[in-house]
Length: 320
Ligand code: ADE
Image (cartoon, rainbow, N blue to C red; front, side):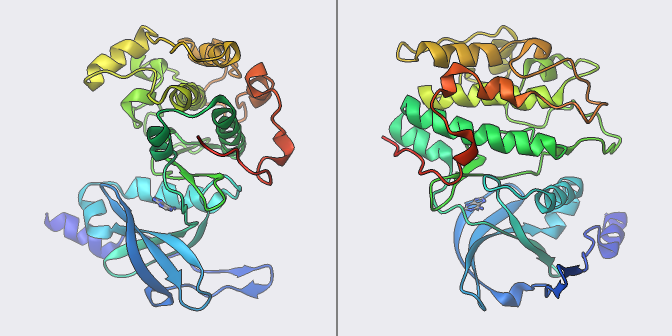
């Protein structure tokens, strides 16, 4: 434990120095710039609380991480990835990182506030969403994932808990702690399992030499489409092992109310071989430039009537 303390003193959390942005100096924020309010959520390594910027009275979500705990549990790599990925991504459907700073005890990420909570809560509340609503949210999700992949980021833990809703009811994808930056070799195996049992792709479970992590995000999209409509994920069992068995056998059933187009869309995504999955081509993790063909997803008849160029300005259809 002595060596660990020595490591802690050197601090693995490097302070980023603010540089001039568009000719204007942006001041480094500190804890004193915010009033911290009610708790929004708690994870294993972080707590999310409401944070009001004193100067502007703008309300954000502050993700607060305990440095000692992260060092002890050897999670510094994931925290650094989350910070770097969030800093890089700017999209209306992805939580934006406004400021990152630290004090002796904690790291602080000041993020967009998702005032309407997790999409999961809404799916549970209504026991599944109507097809127009599910179609709209799948469209927003596809645009966000396309943007991520175009920018070399694979999320690796897409699920309705990580899809938050802003005050305008548009999505804000959060939780990039398990994301992977493509083309950046950190020495780890890219196909080691990091996600959530119900959404993990069969190729990750089979532990192939060349698992396809981009294709695994697409697999998760299929699981999410099913869940939005059915109210529950397609592969769910009493324990993780049984869930994995169902995934490997592609064992799921559609409730009777699913439309022909919804079933066809999901069937074409939940294909065991990632090379034949909708939008997926024969790509390798080692080639960061090939990304799924998201137009194959967007042009599916399930999305008839979606105005892809205007989604972030449109009013999401009311849930019922
Ligand atoms: N929980 C986790 N992240 C959040 C956010 N950005 N807004 C609201 N609740 C959250």
